[in-house]
Image (cartoon, rainbow, N blue to C red; front, side, top):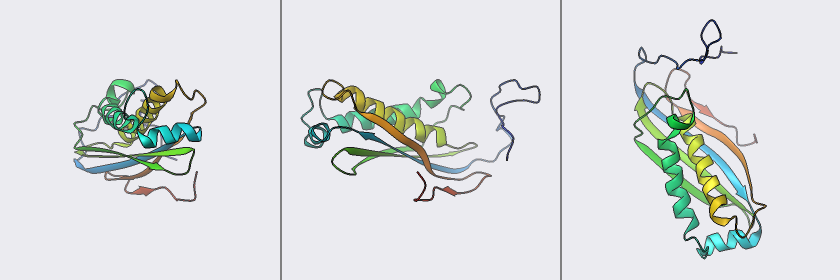
Length: 161
């Protein structure tokens, strides 16, 4: 097990010094889902929500969430992201899957940015639909893949939850 890098030898929290690392192309993909009543998902699919096109607003919110990650997570490095892509999939009549793909050429990875993008997109979907379905559930937010950097490539086994 690797030691936790966000703590120094005395146990004090710190931002990791990445100045000695060579920049590399970094990619991270994260996913999550929002479960809801079938009528709510149908409303999203048909773009009939009173607040507008839920998926387009959630997509923009996810992009903004990725860009603001360092403002939300105290020890994340601020990064000038090269790309953020948010996609949605209607998995069944109750489940909307969200995936974020984030890329950067930098000294540190973008896993947190991808996870933040999915989280903010999911929260936006909840916000836009809560008037009709307060029982929506946000779940399964996880890293799906990351590449670049010293630790190499990670790809979640599709059988893992």
